[in-house]
Picture 1 (cartoon, rainbow, N blue to C red):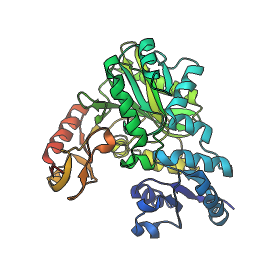
Picture 2: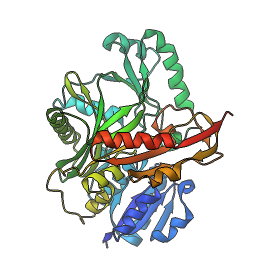
Picture 3: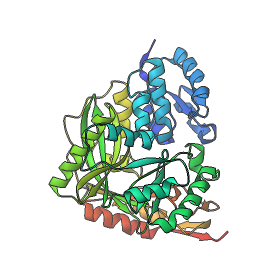
Length: 414
């Protein structure tokens, strides 16, 4: 018998588990063995330790757990767990997002194909092709011009994204793609299959993300977030909300996000849809059927009064009411990526000072003395985020940047 207040939670951080417990839910928790902290054991009714991205390993564990615990929904708030949760939904008839729909988000090539086959979404379609052999790069450049983008069809946090500036860069890009396909040392390679790559047209313009929550096909925009890119790279170092946009541009992007979600067949839960405001208008970059990272959950909760992750869990169980409409901002928030010079961390300074600042919203650092700082090739290689509040977006960004400067991470070359 299903228990309406028990959830199967797949992957994520300890904070995700605590949020489910704080909602008064019983939790069957699925996690990678090397990411499970034993002190979390009392919070869950049952713990399944496995590579949850391997369906052959996960399925029998889930079937057995369902017979014993009768959970009513499968939920994941982390990218690698989205497709597994959808597979569980399909297998046990739990409702929620199906694997077919979820995989359109987690496979960027499928997303582009879906957009190409359906009605136009946004100001223009983006040409895209799979990268299958070495000559594909030169053919795509000849057909669609330079620059263009090469990226893995799966993954997150800009990992593996390469901008191809001209024909003279093709050999370097080929070498880079080969290195990414064979890399084993990066943390992302354990959770994602960095094997298939795709090429797509480069679209100029600033990047924004639409944070939405869908209630049985009604797509509510929670906020538009401004993504601030590190100069000379594709790395999103800053996020600020509400975005500093004209009302007209904001509504055009909101309409594009809603059309996109309908095109994808998405009906329930959070989504983080990245949109480029090109000279022609909004253009879909990519999307994830989850809440965005970079402390966006904390920022949305502080500014709008709704925690989209807690809402995702409770909505999946039928324990939440739909939002009547778009919430109104109460101030603004910004977050920034913490970085340091490559090398071995010797000491970290300024964290307590930043936590004591009344403008600080959160400090999330995943680095301690002795840790290795990798080359900064994507957001994932950052060391965490700091976020701050302000009466408006300019003030929030200024407070965040000020706090960022106060944190000093000293490294030594290795």
